[in-house]
Structures are given as C-alpha cells and as structure tokens.
Image (cartoon, rainbow over all chains, first blue to last red; front, top):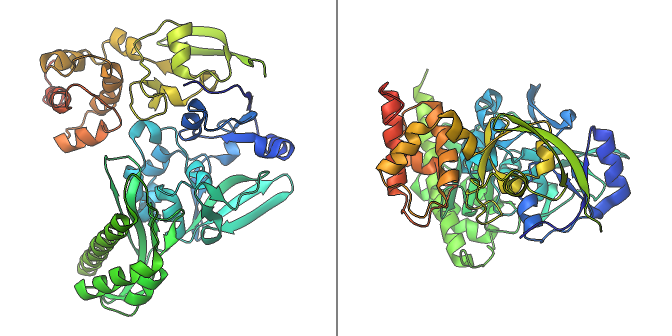
Length: 292
Length: 165
C-alpha cells in the first residue's frame, strides 16, 4: 500500500525538532532511520499529521568514548555502531548483538536511538541497554532529563518518553571486568527473534559475583532475570548452576503467546539459550584466564 | 488534507535530476513512475523482501523504506546504473550461467545486495553468502543457484581471473 498523506519537515537543528514536538505532540512522528516507521506508514498502521525528519540534525550523530561511558548518538546507524572500534572494544555485548539486527540494507539506515525509542519487544538493542544499565538522555523544549534503561521500557512499543520529548543519546557505562554474551533465536537470520538474551556477568575465579541477565522477545518489554541471577550468584559456573538458573527463570518470565511461538515454547527456548550463554561465559572466562 | 509536495534535486545513475514530488512518495515509486527506471521492483512494500534494494549515498538500502524527499542532494544508483557501468557484469553473467533466476522478479534486488559482497572483494563461505543475502526473498530458485553464482564470482575475482565470466 501507499503511505497516507502527511506534512513533512526536514529539521535543520535540534531546537526546531523540539519546538515542533512541543507544538504538535502526539500528532507528530519522528522520522529517523524509518525502517519501522515507513512500513507502518505504507501499511497505514500509522497516520501522523506531521513527519519530523531528524536525519540532518548533526547534534544527534556520532559515537564517542567519554570518561566512564560510551555515548551513542540517537542517529548512529546500526552499520556505524557495528563497525565502530569503540563499540567493539568497550561494548562487546552490543558488538555481538549487531549482526542479529535485521539485514544489511536495514542496518545501513536504521538507528540506535530509533530502536530504543520504538521499544519493539523483539528488538535486540533495548535488551542490551537494559543488560548494560544504560541511561537515555531525552530532551524537550523545557529541558533535558536522563532515564535509566530499567525505567524506560513500559510495554510493547511504549516508553517513558513524553510526546514532546526526543531521545538525544544513550550513555552506556564501560565495564571491562564483565563478560558479555548475546544470543538469539529467529526463524530466518535477521528476522524478529522468538527468544533472546543479553548477559553481562562478573566472574571471580569462575564464581558468579554479579551480573545483569536481560531477556527479550518473550515479554512485552526487555526483562531482567532477577531470580535467575539470584540462583547463580555466588555459585561456580557449570551445568548444575545453569540448571538452577533455568529453573528460576520460570519465576522471572511470563512469555507472550502468539502465532510465532507459544508461551511454553518461548520459556523453553529462553532456558536453552540460558544454558548456552552460561557455558559460553565459562568458556570465555577460561580463555581469558589462560591468556597473559 | 491536500497532497503536500517538495522540490528535490539529486543524482540518479550519474545524471542530475530535479523534480517536485509528493512528500509521502517513497523512493521506488519516484524511480519507477517519475524516472521510468522500472528495474527496481516493489514486492512487499514494507521492507521484508528486498526486491526494492538500491544504493543511496554509497550504501545498500530498502528503496521502499525511504521517502523520495530524503534523497534530496544525494546520489542514487539503481540496477540500471550498476548494469551500465559494468561493475557487476561478471556477477550478472554468473547468474545466467548458474540459472540463478527464474521469474526474475527478485533478481535486481538480489544483484544489488550481492554487489555489496562482491565489491568488498573478500572470499566468503557459502554460509556467509547466505547470511548476507538473507534480506532478499526469492520464491523460485530455492537460493542454491544464487549462492552458486555469487560464490563463483567471488572465487573468480579472488583468483585474479577476468572480471568477465
């Protein structure tokens, strides 16, 4: 189908975007990479009065290392994030996730901020942000505020962003003492995941000292496996510990049930991925201990 | 609401073009209806099938997921452009040689996507070729022959053979 009629503004700067959002509120939609918005427009699932194209707003671009965190501009495209030496070195979890984000042509346009702000339950980056304890900087014409990833995702394509606010950048803490593991299952590479996880673990001599276990594509939002973490904290990684995590996972997740996969199947798959991820973490810890 | 339009000026396959376009028109409709470049196909029109793949400012994109107005000042290369420059003449010949097309609907998008891999100039496994092409649907070939054609082209280029098959 063809998109419905709308007005279009190619914004020249951040102040203009914020003013237009202030004036138009929910009747306006931000056009960033457009890889979810354009399908929604073409299928007439979205009918905004105004599209605000932010693609030429330079203040929203770039990836940089700043003190204890990496700043990822809202307009950083997936391909740019995937190819960034800073991301590869300091945010290995995101580097691992990137090849799973859609397909090459979509990664060339889609943006980091767009994925966060859209908050699709099957998306990889919201789960990574949650696992990495990222903060989102949002702005309106009234000022700026920061929102922790744990407080940002409220449901299927629902976030703590107000209608007059724009996601400016994501600040991701650098924790080089942690081991990162990202895994997902999809029917075709690059398709929407039907189960997935993003783990960040602190291991001390093979024992789980701390971590954040984020699951996605099973709930209506990325969800922390708090009981699964409690079950493995203080334990030595191994098959018995993995089984304890999987058993506890049933208390963390109440997966959605739809045509792609039943709730039961999703919970089972998250368990399968959890075993694989913990084995992978153990293997990497051993590898790191063995290298000088 | 009346149809809002906007003037745009861009380069398509090396030629400057200037038009006034509806702001809601996506790039493929612009290419096909305004410029008569019908090599770029519309399959699903929501980013799943890859038939609309084109190059914008040097990178592969879904033509149905960009508005024409967004290419103002930019550079678009379609399958007609790639064909004319000879950049993928060997890949095209390999598609014919390996029967990598039947109805041909997906072929322009498939070639645009495969061209990215071919121009990178690195040897790739069949699994890597499949992953690279995972964003492009083909309903005829079962993909095997397409992977054959891309693999053969990569091999010929890597061994320094003639670009022509």
